[in-house]
Image 1 (spheres, rainbow, N blue to C red):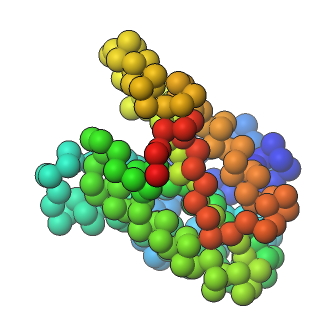
Image 2: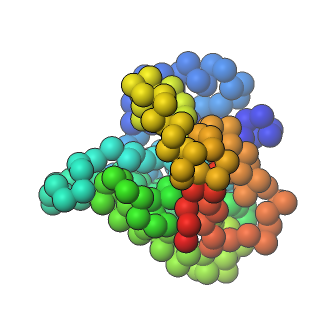
Length: 225
């Protein structure tokens, strides 16, 4: 987004590390806060608008696929995973809605192919949360659309980045990862953060002015549904 000419507000629960990133992105601001908490989401949005002057684009990128193995779910784990992967988005959209309506803005939610179909071995808690996120995006598109606000989701497949699960699996057994890619992924490769960033930049741009309420799959041809 910064490369496309946007001024950006960067968020994480802790300011540690955010300052380093902000230093690489001229004009950006740092606003720490836990978006799974409604009060924090309201504050983060308010501080971002105060710093930037307005809010045109919202990218809901809070989430984590780390959870317990299928069949070992508990009430506490359901609450934790849904807070990270669903409430963080609903809280932030609600907090930013007025500002986005004023600018006729755009929202993109980062999801997962785990919300599209059963991915063997994927945590059930995570898959259910992402499925719920897709339902939210599709359902909220109409009320937001009445005010000129667009919302879409991107469902990535296997993305490689530093310290990701795929980075660790490559270090542990590269041959097995390559075998899996050959069996399951049409393009036979892992995706990159840049792949995700490119489709996000498109979806929030005027080039996607007629796109809303959709889940955009970005998995190299892995899912079959």
